[in-house]
Image 1 (cartoon, helix red, strand yellow):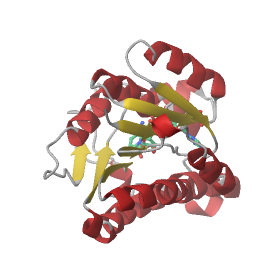
Image 2 (spheres, rainbow, N blue to C red):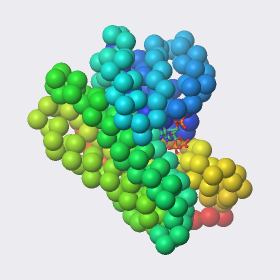
Image 3 (spheres, rainbow, N blue to C red):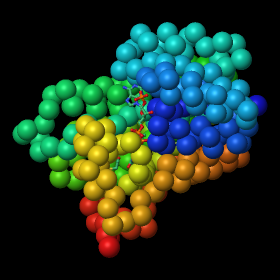
Length: 249
Ligand code: NDP
Ligand code: 8X3
């Protein structure tokens, strides 16, 4: 039975991925800051698989390394790492961007992903096996107006996926990236700081992806035979042609 560790499992893509991988008989380590949600999720998944929860902020280096080092024996061997935790904070022109928003995006989307990876890669390298899935974005392939720092954080994820794939090649570790377009999750509520009307407007007049759509592709990626690595997968709603070209009714 393989074990998958999913960051950002309390909501959206990460939560759906937990359900999808449980269905494929993965043991799960589910992570996030909101402990109450992790507990509820653990209870929901418990009938299907073994689940361990880890509560930490990916920006907190010591908390990341402490939590992963403290995993119980049954969950120590991470076969699949899904680096999903992250968010956009704000949507502002560069000259009026908020410094705290910039810190939050760079610290969680880039540095947090690095900390979690650094805590898990040595075990994979020692075992000469493992699979890392980084959640990129169409925003990591194309820059759009006011997306500046969020896009930069996802371009960084793109570079890190390529870098990891090159450096970890010698250990037989697979590294893949999935780049979603518009997925209706709590993403826009976080980006617009709880402004629900503005968040809902993002998906108005089109059928966005669901988090389950992305979870299904992640599940496909991690259940390929050992010699197959889906390295870079873009998944868009049919109504979306690029970061900015969207057909709305
Ligand atoms: P959600 O807001 O629904 O989920 C974000 C998850 O990340 C939550 O579980 C949250 O958990 C966790 N998270 C955020 N910051 C931190 C942190 N500092 N420490 C630990 N966990 C954190 O959004 P999505 O599911 O949409 O986002 C998941 C990933 O998908 C992100 O990387 C996002 O950039 C990417 N993405 C999303 C797209 C979309 O349109 N929705 C499109 C392309 C990519 P908690 O708050 O409990 O810590
Ligand atoms: C999330 C997709 O287009 O809002 O990464 O940046 S977008």
